Length: 434
Image (cartoon, rainbow, N blue to C red):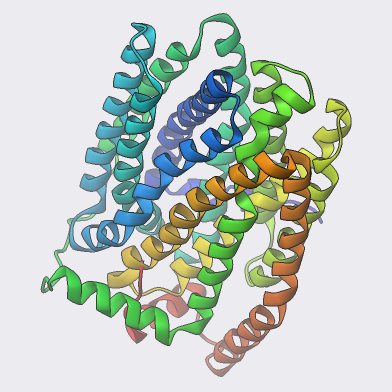
């Protein structure tokens, strides 16, 4: 397939989106540096896969607890201002972590406590940040392209951040990684201040939070095409995606390496993720994203099976690249479909349900993976995760194919509807969740 350069990066024609992308990209590099450094420090101190899982749990489970409320806040108030607050709070969290480590006063419980704080911040950040992309794009037909490119900022960071983190960990220590992450938030805050957004229109009425929870859940219940996607995402996040919890074990124990080895593993996964991003950004509008989702879930399973029992680092890295390619599309496609099919006044809550599936299941899965690997070993644990990924793709294949057929039929009944008009029609149909 020939990739059209202009089409691949067409969302950058939107000034606001280009600014947002630039600032977020720099910040995400810092985020991955901190994430890599925390995992390495905890495993170096404890040599315990369970403690690695507990680290993931403390960082992400608070997001699960507060994501629904974060979705309501994002639908009530201007998302731009919410991001200014959450990104500033994230900067302070990273700065405190850096000061504690550089001063030599950090303890394990303090790192976990700061993880909890960051997870709570993310519960309000993610439901505001993802729908904001929708507001930055003028031509809504470019939204899938913007979402794919938006994921690339994470994947580029996943390539660069761990590699930098490995080098800095070896030469300067983890405190410098945390300090650089704090400084990276200045880029995103600067880009946010340069955005030119329309005047925020407040919702006509504000219901009690419990009523908004109810409305969101009712919409989810009555929209099986979305609820089944969120169920599939939850299963993947619980049973498969926490495979990266065990990467420090592979770096230090299986491959007999050091912090650089750990950083390189993440970077190879990032290489595959970037390839996946370019692929998604370059595919033609109207392609069956659900089919791509099923294929890439299967690819992830194959990659984990191949990676699991290889003990020679160079031989394992092609499977790490393939795992990155398969992993990348999952959250991107889930979020893209949910965004396009969600009503404007419910989009925040809908994304919060996606966030709940991720932030709720990933930490629980991390704990489970860490516990199981203590008993059967990291290689066998990842082998089982690969098999489960393929099984999930098979179980959901019929449902997703039928959903696509129904969507195509609805479009054929109104052939004059453009992608933007279809989005507007969906927005007017019902209220969505986060």
